[in-house]
Image 1 (cartoon, rainbow over the protein chains, first blue to last red):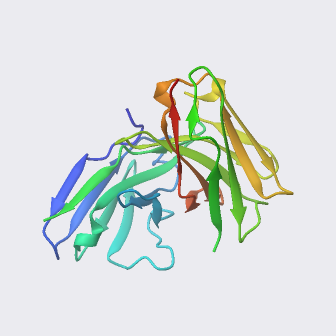
Image 2 (image 1 turned 180 degrees about the vertical axis):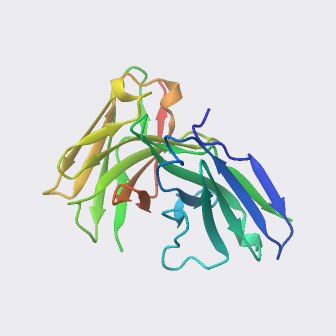
Amino acid sequence: QSVLTQPPSVSAASGQKVTISCSGSSSNIGSNYVSWYRQLPGTAPKLLIYENNKRPSGVPDRFSGSGSDTSATLDITGLQTGDEADYYCGTWDSSLTARVFGGGTKLTVL
Amino acid sequence: QVQLQESGPGLVKPSETLSLMCTVSSGSIKNYYWSWIRQTAGKGLEWIGRIYSSGDTNYNPSLKSRVTMSVDTSKNQFSVKLTSVTAADTAVYYCAREDNGLFLDYWGQGILVTVSS
């Protein structure tokens, strides 16, 4: 059981937009920055979004993050087949004094 | 570009200690937090803990009694030991750098550790 809650799967057609949600509590998302990671099959996770809405160099602006209160969202526009992957949200939990992740969301591009 | 590489045995017997090392290259280990994360087959990410270059640590409460991390700044390496392993500890283990203690910006490729007799 993950501390952060994500939908197990989402899907959308190529070229469309998809939103992945991440729900937490006041001790984690409510008081700390959220980051998002993308994991392609058989590879290590890669940083996609940090500090709620910032993109590392090289990440296209099709990927955007936002946050409100105790939840965060990752939006992906202009979906491509190469975007099929598992997406994880993560943050620090001040009560647990530990880093926590969501259970991951598998994105399927139809 | 910072690179991280995990190393260690791929097979550990039940009840024994799992020991892994992460070597950092193309960057200094100083003034950063360094994390270990694991992922069981088909499952999500589980944070094991982190160590600062000074040696300060934070561990996952669910693993705290079995985990010890250490750092060797002279060798740009950090390591993790997990005691009394069981089959449930079979996973791919990743090391990663925490930027400002906020997010994991560089990850190793991961190493599969199987617990089996």
